[in-house]
Length: 248
Image (cartoon, rainbow, N blue to C red; front, top):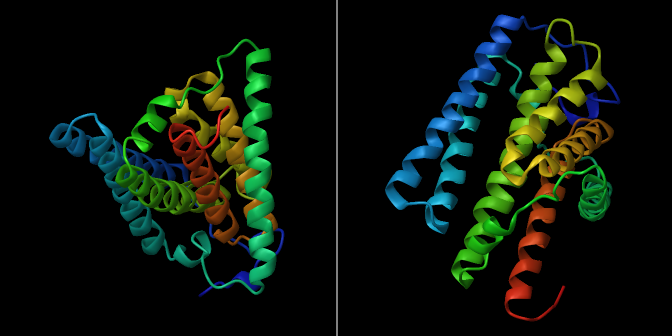
């Protein structure tokens, strides 16, 4: 049965349950493919901008293909990945704009909070150095990473696939805020390369984006647009700083 945005309210409809064995199989298979698909581009292209860019793209693509396979096999694709045309574009865009502003403000406030807790602020300069290498590199990172891998890919994977699986999992099903917290923690952990501060700050972002999905009648569109916009703003500011258009 196809589920439309209009059929979702603050809670999803009655969901088919999922056992822990099937849940772990699906999560592990997605994770293994994600890691495995990230290696060949780096081996072939090296650890420079091109290699990292290709690695991000192939790992996300591989993970999404496996996630798509499981969702389609379980007959839950239209419930997990709601990207249909919204009932109101102005409302959707306004939600995305508010989410974008809130996340950008949180990055500044969160950096101060994690430092007050004794952790280092997130270190993302290495990534931004790749972004600003050249005009072509800047465009590729915006399109491939900000919009496709992060904006679309991460939202389909975390707020879509993982959140849906958790909402069906035995022991968690019916406890939507528990599922929300777990997906947020799982979203933060892969950002350990930014230090513990990055894990904490990104985890809060994941929590907020999960809440936005709930408030958006379970549509992923506001999350996708906001996530992509945040990364675009951050990369654009770094490039503008390199060109000495702005100074921090």
